[in-house]
Image 1 (cartoon, rainbow, N blue to C red):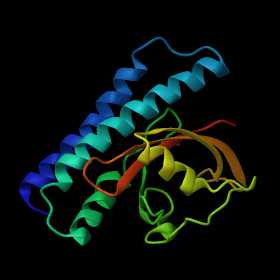
Image 2 (image 1 turned 180 degrees about the horizontal axis):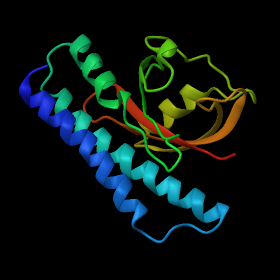
Image 3 (image 1 turned 135 degrees about the vertical axis):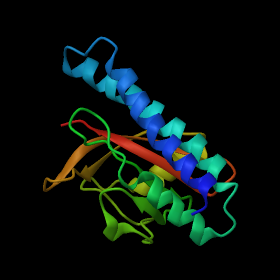
Image 4 (image 1 turned 90 degrees about the vertical axis):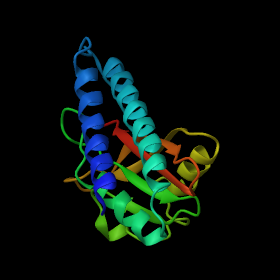
Length: 173
């Protein structure tokens, strides 16, 4: 990785830190409804900032393999929310996993036909939301460190001028 890409990666990680710390300076939520709204706001802020930054960096990278390696490096160690349950994932619009911070076994897999415990085609729904400019999708997913699927509200945005989208989610249980 050249020096410019390394600098941009440091900026990207720093931006996540600043955004999550800035959000924590606001009045703390006092109930479950406020906590969910708080976490949704953080999700939008961090996804939007990372989508913009990834778009800028990926313009400077020539090959798809180098782009994928950069994306994986950029999101791998980023965590947020008070319990560190916040992480990023990146898919292409065809539902192939490009990067996942907590489930490396998904890398390169096409999850177009993946259904959650309620029968929802999760990645299809996320991809559709991203292709429509971004948004929230409710689904069930395995929470890191736990067993069984938990209710989750995901937020995704497209990475401009690419076939990728980035997302995160808020576990609601």
